[in-house]
Length: 327
Ligand SMILES: CC(=O)SCCNC(=O)CCNC(=O)[C@H](O)C(C)(C)COP(=O)(O)OP(=O)(O)OC[C@H]1O[C@@H](n2cnc3c(N)ncnc32)[C@H](O)[C@@H]1OP(=O)(O)O
Image (cartoon, rainbow, N blue to C red; front, side):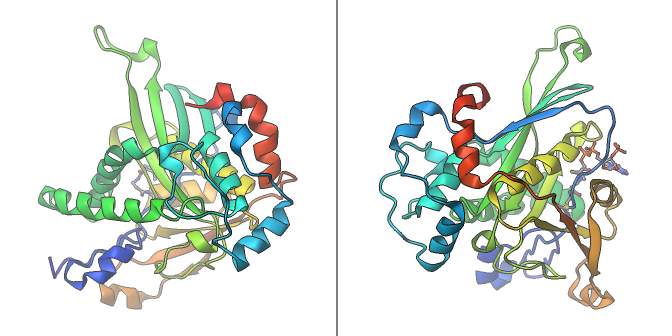
């Protein structure tokens, strides 16, 4: 394993502690963007089931909360047992963090595609293994690793996802599900819901990866990474909507609207998607990264339009919608 040095899309903090298994998944996951006209309108809500709301600490002015959060990150917030297991971080949270967790818990993005229906939400704890498989397969594919490496990749990806869950609500893994249209099923084939893709969204400085790939994005800015769509479900618009859902989440929950991502120069599909979505290359790796056995990457950025909705507004206004959006 000592010789395995992979440049992909992860910044595996845990891997750095073990230099003998250095696998830097660093930038193969560009984003999915295509301005497909056939895609119909999407609905996305950030909401909290109303049955949960009574135990929520009082929300205060968002800007003030953010400042408090920076200076006193462990400000007591009381119990948060009302949150699903997935959203419990095992550490004390500020009120602003709790509000974000609630918004994440209720976040759901629906989309009707030509070939079926898809929806996207935050990965639940019991979906971690499926997400790990999806990512490990994709990393293996992009790094052209023999299948024998799958178990190592799975192990590393799982460690990574566990670590990233600990920074909730500052970074979050989204998962996308897909259900084929019944008329596209062959005789005897049952309608199934498949996990179709995943993407990670870092919302702020505290959710930023400790060692991001080069060219380095600003830590305080939202960052999208580790996007993948199951191979047999590609070219249906799923990647595009994973990106859209990420942007919607950022619009709702992040104060900064400059979204960054990395895209390897060799990855034409995601590069096309990001360009279509309005991302521009801000910097590109020099050829020197080749000496570190890494692929050259573009750092890309998009300025999201300003939104009038603050995170606390989102939670409040969506309380009415909750029961219909929890997937
Ligand atoms: C920031 C990051 O995470 S970078 C890492 C990106 N991830 C990867 O490269 C992993 C392997 N690749 C994949 O998983 C997929 O190919 C993805 C995620 C890049 C795209 O997912 P898909 O669901 O296939 O994309 P989708 O169907 O939504 O297409 C969106 C747009 O991307 C572009 N695109 C997608 N696939 C291709 C392709 N094979 N060739 C050229 N352009 C493509 C097109 O512009 C397309 O828009 P269009 O259909 O209107 O032409």
